[in-house]
Image (cartoon, rainbow over the protein chains, first blue to last red):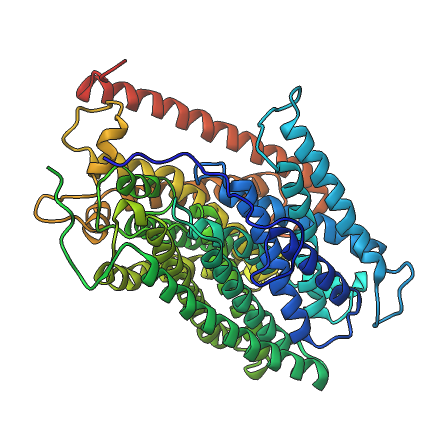
Length: 283
Length: 325
């Protein structure tokens, strides 16, 4: 009988930042955070660019969920994803409430990043409290950093999705087009799944980061396709219509390619892929 | 009693019936794909050497995954309704007849995508336990799972649609639900998943898998892997588990959810009626309506507690004693 091995700490293979592909977790966080923040501030960019930033932000969030959940048994992964999204919604509301300060209407909203930073601080405090000897003392390695990243990635993701649908980060516009219409329910649940499903679906002793990343990109493709469809229906100008059409095509293409890639990788890397067969007999 | 009140009660009964059907199919869907609690058994089996032919549908817990299907269906249906309703003025139901099934079909497609990634990913991550990916297991389970999810999502989306238009349907537009369709789908999805998970899983485990053990015995982990391997005849797959659970576990889960919806809405409506809030929605009668509703709720809870107590005593006397108590 095989015994489940204890979780093995991944040995860092390189020191410092080298930015060689594939990016490691720290580099991924830096790249995703900076790109997503820049794209988020300039809301006039085409939706496809925002979609690419969304993919990066999801990869970052997926890495943080993976880091946090690695020491659990598998039942805690969904809750970490939902926690990140909860951070994200609160951070997004804070950011949107502050968006009008220092903004150029319809072009740039630098103040929304305050929401992301605030959630980073709150996540850090939550992580420190959970790990601290005298409070909860969970003693999970690197939890503080992972929780901080969860808060920031979640906020950036929700804000990017709002920015894709409304085309601006004006508080009233977002409330009218995202919250009142109920699109927020869709965004909330799919952001949850974009964060939790990659690691949850690939969970096991032979999980590897490359396969997990493919699922994150695939789900982001699905989100882009749906948001593109919503933009087409809700569009009031031809700019919004073409934005929606391009985002829909982009999303479907990304989804199809990475879905195929992931299933193929799984079938190649599994113990065996057989058409059918009996189960192994145990003496 | 005015016509509006009769119509409100009638629609409440329709919603309770749809909830019954929705939760029945929800439970069968989770049994078929081994989601939520039963999934830990499938996940564990290979790790303790019991290679199996089960479908490992690890799409988080049932509340979240059902919220996802229902929110997707609600969003697509709502977007289509936005475009279709102006085409048929005065006969908006025609738009709903087209929009709801399309939205639900999209949700079922999402279900297939997530099931496939979960099964392949989790099986590939169990390489060292020599668990292969059986393609016939993969393809053979996708459609049954998606079909059950289609039924659940369809009924839930119908409930959300009825709630959204309850006022229009019963004659007083002020009674329309203030929430949008996707938001209602989301809330109902979480609810149906929670009930399906809490009630349904008990029957999945206790009925099907441990029939040879004494009633009420605690189970050692060593047994857990075994239940995924052999059925009464041949190698076990989850399609026969769904067939088995459809006889009792599914309907009983549906009944739980249906009764919750029925009692909850019934006590609110009776409270409104007794407090004088219906049929004119007199704002001054709000407080007395709420008081009556709370009193009705307390009476129902006490009655249920007494019935439960008597029933459990009778069962223990008839089938007991519990092993290990």
